[in-house]
Length: 336
Image (tube, rainbow, N blue to C red):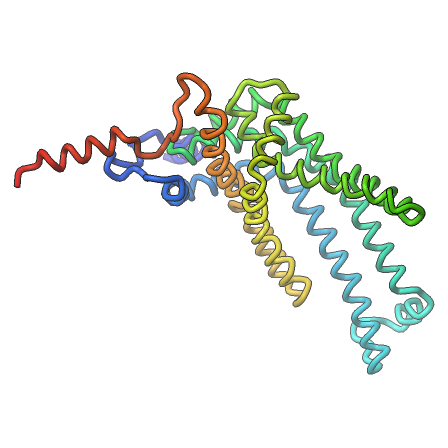
């Protein structure tokens, strides 16, 4: 019995279709919500199965956020001490040390140190997530268009088939933060002497933003089409720019849980906000993001790629005209 339960957990169950013809979704919005309802528990299992790849990044982000919060708390408590003499949690030694420091410069230096620490340690943390994201992209692509996919078997096959390109994408993603940080700092210092250096400084920021948007399409395209690594990057970035408002909206949408929890933590100091955010990503966050991206990219690929390829089915999971016509005929043939 236990073995059967474990097989169902890892491999899923092939069964009947989720819809009758007359109940098929008529548009992608309906399809998204129906598939989310049907696959929600499976998304949780998929996320828990792959969470080990994300734990180093979660720990790194948690360390940086809590350290920044501690710095802000120390500054706030010292300012309160100067105003009303309340030492709070500060000791006399800490107050004496803070009195000799330029606190503004100290906070700037601490922020820079944290940012550089994050950028360096993020390289291995992000690098290992590439193949996992390829597996997630394949399974969620199928689920989002009402096609079957075994949680473990299809995930493993997608990782095995796409791990080289996935590692290439995650390698670029992992080194981009440190390149952006160093370049932005360098050109920022040069801009103090010549305003022309603001041009490459802003270009570096734009490169990072465009790459972040391109990631929306990179993994779904990787598992859907046989293209070279160069063509994969080129096509994904072109589509991301071509669908700029929608892509920006999708990316911002998936940041809402993080923004809400971090803002609550910074303003209230409630550690439960960070714990809730960590729990969200441990339970479903990464799989949910991939599912949303898959639902979005399926429509984009159908419109700009699949519609121009002979023999490729489009609008998978949606009701087709012949289905609707059959339903109308059946209703007409029914006896009065």
